[in-house]
Structure formats: C-alpha cells, structure tokens
Image 1: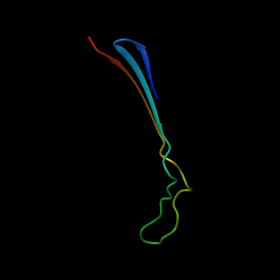
Image 2: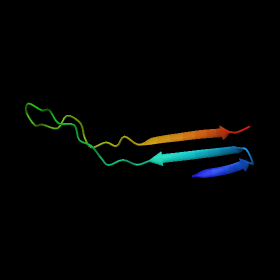
Image 3: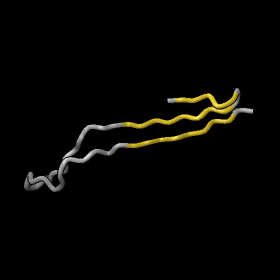
Length: 49
C-alpha cells in the first residue's frame, strides 16, 4: 500500500503473511516446535528533491 503525501513525498507499507512451518528433528523425525509463521512488516518513507 502506498500513499502520496506530497508531490515529492511517498509513504509505503507492506505486510507479508507466510505459510506455517513445523521444525522437525532430522534424526528422529519428531516435531520440535508447533506450527508457526514468520510474518513480516515493512514501512518506508521516500523523499525526492
């Protein structure tokens, strides 16, 4: 999502939802953790002169 604040100023925001992951022990095959997501958010402000 981007917003034009002024003719030379722009604000941007991005949010990523990633699929669930499960960590397993490679030797036994048992699950070490429950399902979790590594989501991320990024915000930025661009200025051009």
